[in-house]
Length: 116
Length: 116
DNA sequence: CAAATAGTTTAGTTATAACTAAACTATCTT
DNA sequence: AAGATAGTTTAGTTATAACTAAACTATTTG
Image (cartoon, rainbow over all chains, first blue to last red):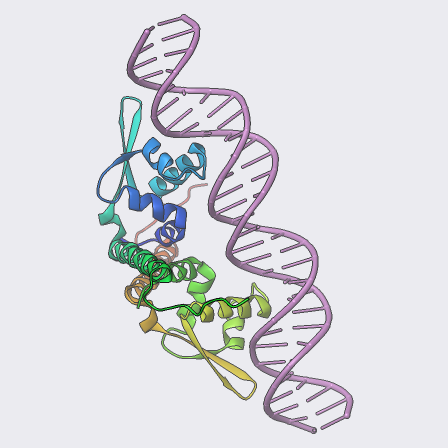
């Protein structure tokens, strides 16, 4: 189980990271994944999914017209933990940013009045 | 110690991986690194070193006209082990290839005589 | 079976990363 | 100080990755 360079490359892309995050703990359809990233076309998402599939990082299952994808966490070895910690950290950053935003509005520290 | 996405990106590049490998356990000069990759210019190497430096993955030290670089293994967290295992695996592959090559020449297993 | 839905694939475009050539900085040698 | 050595930086080029638009496959629904 050799941890190919291809894997590193595959998870270095923010787009593919986002996809992996979406299908990390539960399978999702290609359409769901696409709707979660409205800034790109369905085709673009499909191509990235194919990339992840080729790298062996996701599994696909067809059901009716849908294709369900899910992350193969076990294939990522130590990378799995790393990605999770990255996502956790992103959350933390977001929260921090929100708090900063809050304190900017609220009266926590009086701002010097603008003098004309 | 947040394991930024930038780190992933930095070590996904084969060129930068090769550089890290060269300065993994001992510092080396920029020139040494360049001579080890004769297919690119010194400038290209210097730019990659700068990239690694900006990502915080290497340290630099100036001495006279030389600049010594070394990998900051501790900054890579779990990635460090991963890279090492990748390199080990590459070695293993190389050795295997060499053995195969050897057995193709040597008399390990008698080849059927070519009949004219 | 025609139209709709879900997705993939292809061919061409655009954005990004890597690289080159050459100018540049700094240190050392003569 | 002139030349050589070690390296960096800049501006422009080239290679690669990501994306789009549109054609395509397959399944479902009326």
